[in-house]
Amino acid sequence: MESVVISVRVRKEVKTKLEEEGIDVQSEVKLFLEHRAAQSQLKEALNHIEKILKEHSKPSKRGFAVKSIREDRNADH
Image (cartoon, rainbow, N blue to C red; front, side, top):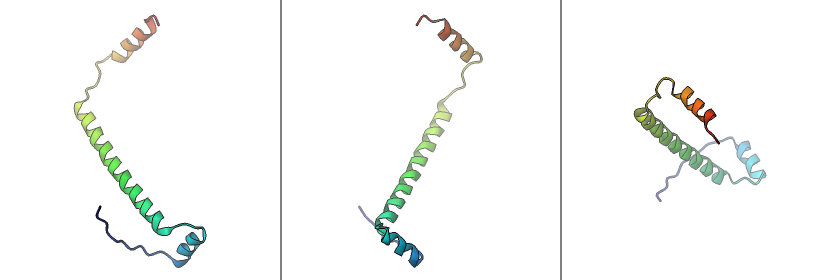
């Protein structure tokens, strides 16, 4: 997998505090960005699915819900 180098500038006290807490700043930044990229991909996929559903779904006929509920109530369970 190809990778690139990015640089992030933060205040020195931020980095120092994180390191004092035992936090690997580099790993945390990588994890955050990977998570953010995955969220973006998921959002795109959901938008695509929503578009397909809108294109292929039809509204139910008038009275369908009432009829369906009545049938369920009258059915012998």
